[in-house]
Length: 112
Image (cartoon, rainbow, N blue to C red):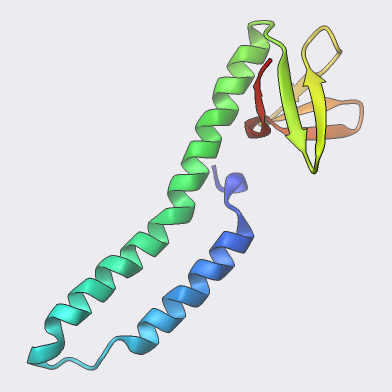
């Protein structure tokens, strides 16, 4: 699952968390409500990359299952599209589709 975590998103969220932690006031009675809201925002920011990775992982597993059932897939990577199927001599390598030395993440595909 963690191979699907986008490191750019993690970096931005890390920066946001740092800024949020700096803005959390010292414990005083009048700031307790603001502190609680900041903690909820912090929790939400931490959950974003995990939820995105879980979604991508599920998409990859669904596409691998389709591939195993002889369904042709269209995979997009860096502006190029590739037809992935057993008939085109593609194989599965962990959570990637592989043809010779070229690999495409399985979550980057959709059914043709």
